[in-house]
Amino acid sequence: MAADGSAGVAGGRLPLAEALAERERAGRPIRVGVIGAGQMGTDLFVQITQMPGMEIVAACDVRPERVEAAVKLAGDGCRRMEVASRARDLAHAITRGRLAVTGEAEAVCRAEDVDVVIDATGNPSAGAAAALAAIDAGKHIVMMNVEADVTAGAYLACRARAAGVVYTLGAGDEPTAAMELIRFVKALGYPVVAAGKGKNNPFRTDAIPDDYREEAQRRNMNPRMLVEFVDGSKTMVEMVAIANATGLVPDIPGMHGPAAPREELHAFFCPREDGGLLSRRGVVDFSVAKGVAPGVFVVAEMRHPRVRERMRDLHLGPGPYYSFFRPYHLTSLEVPLSAAAAVLFGECHMQPLPVPAAEVGCVAKRDLKPGEMLDSIGEYCYRGFALSRADARARKALPIGLAKGARVRRPVAKGELLTLETVAPDETTPIFAARRAQDAMIAEL
Image 1 (spheres, rainbow, N blue to C red):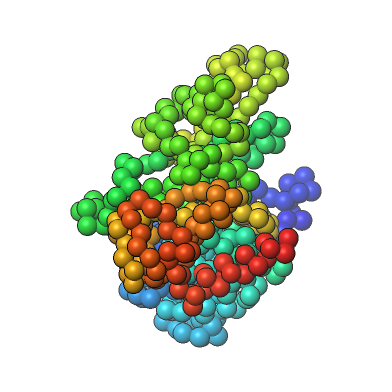
Image 2 (image 1 turned 120 degrees about the vertical axis):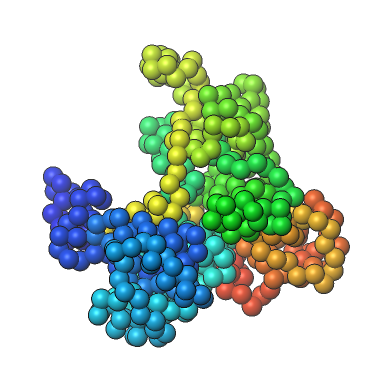
């Protein structure tokens, strides 16, 4: 029997598409709660209406009109909205076939008739709070919030395991797309030399929202979110998410980020003694060359003569290093697959190991003065910067998820790494509490 009680294939579980189709036929769609109705949340509304066996039954946003706009854009597949507040009011609305809408994320997480929660806020503190509320309520949690994951994901995943629910990053982002290739290569028994992505925007480390408002409007994006991509913060976050799920590490602080063409990834991301950039095997990195984004890659080492003979026959080169490439990732459009897999099969697409391998720190975009309060990722004060966990601990790097609202204690020059000695995080936030709990958890391992 499959996890949803249906008959599987040859005594096993049904493939995901068939399992969703069966839920649709049975009139028992997976009931999804969405936290955040911005760009990512709106994509979820549209995508889930295209899929059998799933529906959004509850949504949270501090601006209910954004949920209304998402529903209107999604069209006929959505329920009619009904504003509610408490969890039991949401459950009552859901039972009557309505889309329960609230400004309280915890109410969505605790509503009785929600099977799985998707966090689409992009705010580390909001993401940590939503994840913990969902886990405490016995709900699966799908994180589109990679910033929260790289800050306290090991703790959140541990809490989910203890509660018997799934904590997973969502399919469709570069980390989960890369994990498909990593698992493929590892299942074949080949060492992973490097894993990464193509950076899909110009790499301008001093980018600020003022310079990107017109482009953001044209692309229907928040300028802050666009800058998070341009200044490299998102790339650093995504590569550290891969590191923490696999044990791979940045080879150097900030990674190499060469203009490595798609056809030559294996020539760049291999050890120095073989003509590459790397001082070690088993790293995360990225390429800024055109033609790599929006894809992800893995470089594997394949030494056996017979294997290399076969690879030559397949026109994949002489080896011993080979690139495996997925040329796309569908961002928010793939995320519902993770929600479905969690509910139907108890399956996690990606989560951190108990002890992180890397950290996203912060580098000042401009001179910072004592008393200043730091803004959000993708704004004016700092950008993300990937380090191995050993480097981050040695330098007392400020985790990027703790940066918003932190106070500058000492002068920090443009280009300097922010540390826990130069900046004081806001200790009242959910993400700070989750990170403190993670540090304590790791200390006991």
